[in-house]
Image 1 (spheres, rainbow, N blue to C red):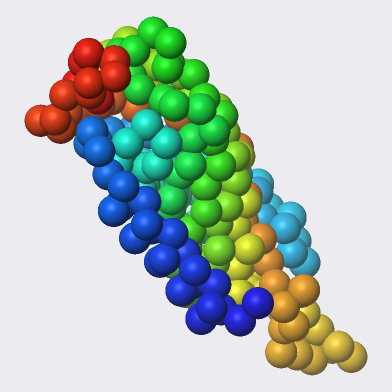
Image 2: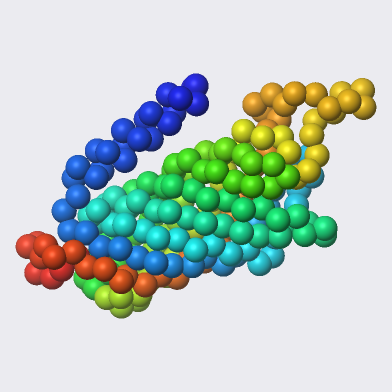
Length: 199
């Protein structure tokens, strides 16, 4: 699928979800875990950290801005990765509502990063989220990022000792797995009539 068409589809889904916004909340949170690259070299980052802002349009759809940073490999090569994501909860999820405090979710979006050079990527993944209280939540997440660069790990594909232009299937991946923790700092003004509380 051409990149322009994929980006257009992602923007369309964002717009549809935004149009269905009902009871808005917003979270700030952190991620801590394990990062790895997959390419000519497989580099790891332990620990790997991220910070995120999440706007919850309703109990099923959320938009997330994610900033991830880690030092990979024995030479501590820095990789910065910023992403805009759409989260879709499999179940209705509302902090503070006992029956809606757990849900698996999937997500996808677009990302811009910096390693040896700047790169674009398509992040996607899955996770679990659990509401501890009406303000705090925890979760576990796996994020895979298919990049459009063959230089994330500092090594390019070579043929007969010379660097060659990378094909799509040779491009590097950047992947993360770990735990999330977040705080709900904004509650929309509209009450939720179904659950008798503000989402």
